[in-house]
Image 1 (cartoon, helix red, strand yellow):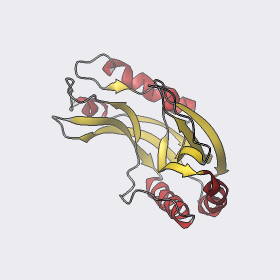
Image 2: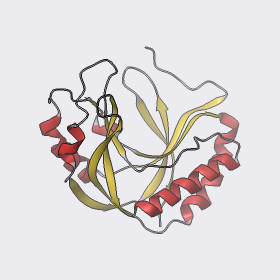
Image 3: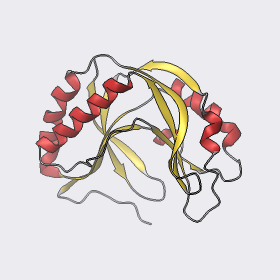
Image 4: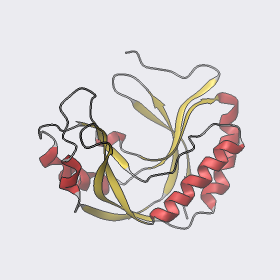
Length: 193
């Protein structure tokens, strides 16, 4: 697979996210260690690629990048200070056919959900198409490969997990470049609170 670069008419594959601090990701990483080589474990996502995606924007036309940045500003500016905590775990997909292993969130999740809604509305206001499904706050930590042995009960081993509480300093606009090892480039950021 070759690395994808944005087309000249494209700003790239973009998403808006909150990034957990190093202390929170290190704590969750320690909690995941006993599960890393468990039979049926997912392919684990490196901690360097952990983001709390608020809105996936997909391929954004280059002419819409500047209006998007302007539209996001008031959506974030109206957000009160937020505190979050990585807590618990779960999966997307069924127990027999799990697809994604995720860590859940505690704390100001209703406010984070409202922020995600405002960001989606901001993206739509400049002409971008955004998935029309409810926001579910989570941090993807692994993916099961179709056709491989999978233990869909594995996330239950983290049901009691509670990481450190942390303030959300900013919302970040990331560009993702696909390839054998996806890369992320920071495009812009807006302070929260």
